[in-house]
Image 1 (cartoon, helix red, strand yellow):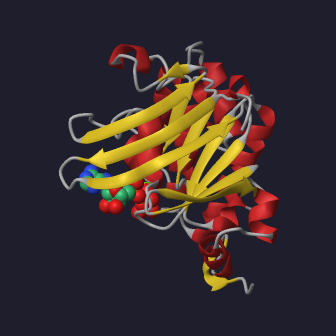
Image 2: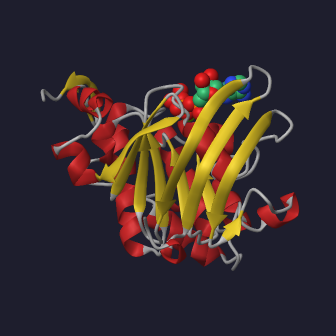
Length: 264
Ligand SMILES: Nc1ncnc2c1ncn2[C@@H]1O[C@H](COP(=O)(O)OP(=O)(O)OP(=O)(O)O)[C@@H](O)[C@H]1O
Ligand SMILES: [Mg+2]
């Protein structure tokens, strides 16, 4: 199917069951990401997007879920390694941007300090450079606390924290959903610019196919924890194989204006 050795991430037959409800959230999902690739997971609320992302980042409490399959990252199965070994991936090679930046940032530490903390060099000028890269140009932002920033600026700070460790994989779970519509496009454009500059693969999670167009290389559409379709972006938009994908395409909210529908 594909040359495994070229994959950065290779998810095989992933199954996730929540023990409390016995719900099969992810039912036999397989996909891969090549280094520097942008791969999008698209699906409606409850389809299992976050469950896949949390499985990859190993952010689930294993006592509450039953997980099976393989998650190969650089040929290491993340599902078989210890929590200590996982810590050397998560927080360095694999970074995660959440929908709510204010939940991920530490409210009692300055933005500059939080970026510095996840940076190997621990150099203030590297932090300032990175802050400039993500559009946090104002020098005083270094000493700002998260609550002093707007939602969009907080998400930029979150992106800076995520990039500080120079990760190979950035998982962005609905990175624009909580933001004001006018800011959404700016953040997507920022991710695009960052991707052009760095050796980085991005796993973008969204319910909005409109965000994917012009951004991702390949797309996986999921429904009820199962794959509906995996294709490259052009194919998904021009010639969707699954009727469900076609339905999603028919109601894409315009990025920056979710109320305005693009007629098919
Ligand atoms: N902690 C949990 N306990 C029990 N069931 C859960 C839990 N978290 C998620 N689920 C269930 O797993 C399924 C997938 O949820 P998930 O959060 O992965 O979906 P999602 O696609 O990310 O949705 P959204 O777009 O709303 O973020 C849903 O049916 C959800 O109800
Ligand atoms: Mg989710």
